[in-house]
Image (cartoon, one colour):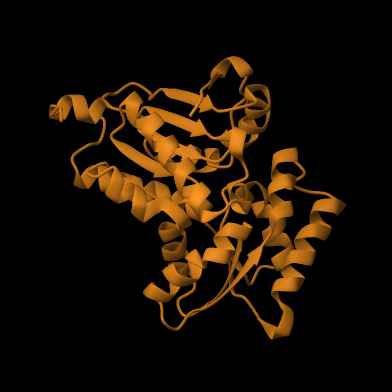
Length: 278
């Protein structure tokens, strides 16, 4: 294996991947915290959504995406996908050791417990994340007094991608999911946005849930974990210029740019996105 000098290593980009554009909410949070870092983002748009796929397929997709980013030369991998974090994080850490690998489930669980110790937590997520009980396990490991309910909310993904983040239709769908979650008297004190699409609906979810419920988004907490790990490894970029960003997608660069611009908070064109094959 080629041994990199420290200077070379610190100047390498951070790789981020997701099944689509949702992970751009995580990328935005990490870029805001670490503005001098270079980033490469890969959205596996040809095979989304991961949330309805089998664990075997999700693990294979995650491995292929990581291999693609590693060939570009990265110093850290951020798995900005709750489903892939739930399914494949441990396997990726073993397979690509010593590459540091950070997921979004663990930071999200930590943030929820910090907000409401011993609380009743409602996790809004995809089918696969719910089926794997990733958040339940992560929260229970950290707070034995917590209670957790997980709710699959596939329609919220569609709302976010269409940009329908307010209005009667979006409100009715959020109300239906929260009412279903509150069945049998489950009174949640926090809502964890367990899918990277859902921060676009954060204000609406918070409004429907009411002021007594804390809404937790793992993006900013993940950004904290990324910074702490880079500091620990003495791998923070030493440059003073603003960091660069490369965007890769496996399909539909025009749609990626249109929808992704909303998630990243910056207008994008199809020319900003490179089509790649895994």
